[in-house]
Image (cartoon, rainbow, N blue to C red):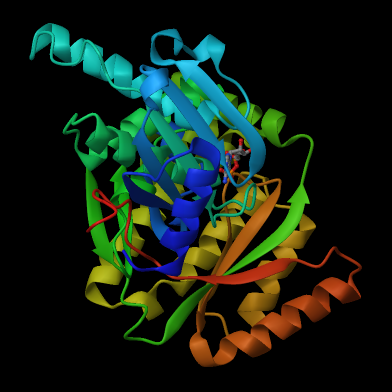
Length: 403
Ligand code: ADP
Ligand code: MG
């Protein structure tokens, strides 16, 4: 690995941990192309991994610190140390709960496997030192958290010789985030980060947990995906998310099904009779969104990426009017993109702020960017951050210094 980043990273690791690392592993952030608030309704999502990655350098613990995990990051001056034997969700907090939560979840998994499959093989996992260097911006809706979890998971999977598959490692990342960090998130982010491929999206069925790589074909069509980060974040985002989840659960229970995934657009008329208007609209978003994700996959396969614009647009309208999770800044970004050459546009992520995405011909992108900045200025909105993301490969499974 001759990349200057790796030389820099090796130096950073050595400065913090006193010796060179064994190797480097990396995993990307993600953007969700379509399928919003469908994951916890056991529905469909279609995210892709992006060309911004978290890289971790990892090496064995120092000779005088056997059995100790020691983690550092360019993001913080703090170095966090803990004995592997003491790893537990309650012992972890702050940024280090992400990498150490993954270490905990993997150690638990190894312990469970050693009881059933390979007795004594994993009773003493070796300690390690790990340094994180991430190019995934925090809180921009690109899942910097999954990038760190997945990069740590692939590194430790190899260092501890656990042999887990990418899908199993995605689940480890989710367990770390749910239990060690305490964020009740689905498995979408980690699946995209682990399973992404160049110029492809990851079609994930959150009921069966099956995944499929779906080629996007953006490069051949000279298309790009522009992310417009509004830098708006609302205080009620957490409460709003919980309220939407509760509405979905209530709608499913009223209709006598386990989750909204068990209903289709054909059920909508009888749902409208039985649910109050707001609950009905919440459920309609989820049910039509599942339909749009499946249709997006079909159209990508048969007609290519230029054919999905109206589905992206319809997804935004559904989130704005039925699910009511958009904000004026997101609506402005989407409308401006649609009026200035985008094939389709929608807000992406949990809502109440965050980012929108626009599928746009490469030649039109600079003019669109200028127009978005201009419109945000005209309405006295905070200037958004604009960046292009390229659907990219997921986590690297191997990364020795001498590769
Ligand atoms: P996002 O939408 O970016 O995933 P989250 O709140 O889920 O936002 O995760 C962000 C958190 O992940 C940060 O507050 C920090 O604790 C952790 N994190 C992200 N990037 C880094 C990094 N480079 N080093 C250490 N921790 C990081
Ligand atoms: Mg996150």
